[in-house]
Length: 118
Figure 1 (cartoon, helix red, strand yellow):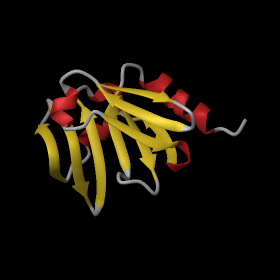
Figure 2: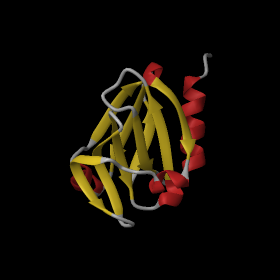
Figure 3: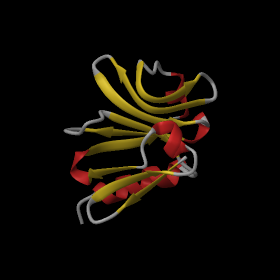
């Protein structure tokens, strides 16, 4: 599972527990102005993953790590599709982050709230 937070104009995504091992990544740190949006999307887990570059993939159990699909690099960390959030990025290494979080709606609200101008 991932923990998503906002810190000083940056989106911080931290993998917890064994997800760090499966994803081969501990943390992603992205400027908020590179975040196009976020959606809670349990159907994302059914999408094609593409080619695994680094990480772990056992169909219907875990998808975690870096994948390439149709020329885009995506980061996955999902075991429970019902808790998946898709974060769209621009100008970053990854085009999309698809991560499992404890509360998808709260995570989307956090990201959307941070993107609004004050």
